[in-house]
Length: 69
Length: 500
Ligand code: SF4
Image 1 (cartoon, rainbow over the protein chains, first blue to last red):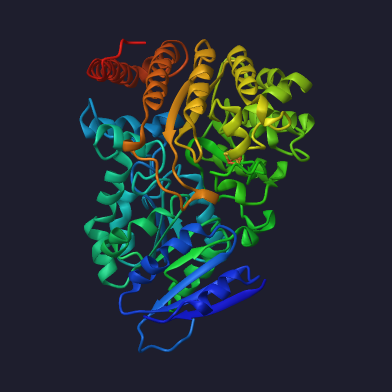
Image 2 (tube, rainbow over the protein chains, first blue to last red):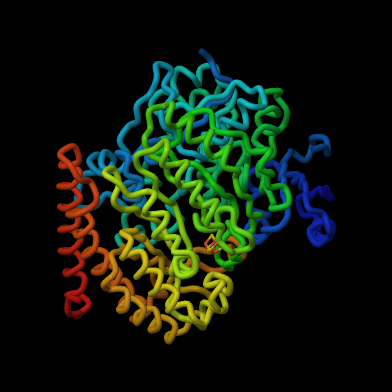
């Protein structure tokens, strides 16, 4: 199973994210760095609603925490 | 006895609906014409529970989650929502499943839009999530994981996601991932906010454990997935898997041991069971029905496709054969869900090109009529859906649907119109809202209303809820039908239409 991991920071551009989405990976793990966890979902909502083929796992953590999922 | 993981849902889900699956659908409507408590009693009475508060019958989806967790050695159980208090003092994880958390699925959303009143399922779910025992346990660190076929609704309702303190939302077939999540929660590791299980990670048959406790009304899965590829449907994204007969038998035995004498064979198309492609397998279907009937007085189907009703009967005489196996002194009819969706061959070709297979989509209205005639003759009563506002729908398509409805008028059935709700491949398209209703749509709504009222009265008088024990329910439903008729006429008068 090919997996892509990507970190989204507040205000960062989404190039890395978009390349993970368009890659052949069947599972994408996304870590969103944010003070407000649920806002991660709001930020990704359109993508999550349109995705049907890949497994998606979304984590959220504070900007100060380690970048680990 | 303590459980680390408690699995549950609100009352509209945790009920056997008086043993009548169709009554459960009343929870998709708002409590109109009757007080809310009476509605709740009518569609979702409390189930029997053991001394720990474990329901005798629980929704099949929750039973599958329980089976996965227990098989993985996790101390988990399905608990009735009225008995959560004592368990949440110790449990570390609460898992909540639902078919329609916020009444955003059809037909709940239609009822809400038409009546302006919130349906019972969503009212009941919110009440449930606001229970003090859940709030208190949450403060103590309880992890809340929600999922089920309506998990996508949380993406729209992040307000409730925040309010209820949900830790993780799981969308898709959760049999495997739920074990991973429970272990993370029990080990104090970070939980993901959201998991969508893609078709590539759908569990194989070996990875789907048998249920450990009885399912509501004896429902047992016989297949998962559907190969027809309708563009508005999320089920079709998953691979088709057929349960072997011995696995089905084991699950029926679990239900029988709990005292159930009925069985609902669950599949997106019962006639697809054991099929090669979409060619039915009459031998296996016959074996399956004999097996189920060996254990149960009443055996019914969850869904069939109209194409295979027609094809199976015309090629193999299969509807006759299977109903011959099932019908006896205990059972003289079957209710089943089917999808008409549209009467327009043009739209059928675009949006559900394989739904009519093995017939061409251009013959869709004929397939529907022939299947309805076969079902009428064999006392199979379809509860059919129509979808209004499909992408690219034109006026001529709705007119074709109206013509088809005229041709179905003499066949015993309920026909429920739905607005297009974007799921599956189309789940990011704009919603079909009330403002988009055309005059033709209103005609479809009227025709469906009067068709369904006429046949509901017939079904209630001759088939459904027979016997003294069901008299109060029968009376309530008759009162409700009278209310619907009166309201329907009022609306027609306000629209300047003559009654149909
Ligand atoms: S036939 Fe039914 S289950 Fe199969 S893809 Fe079409 S709508 Fe979905």
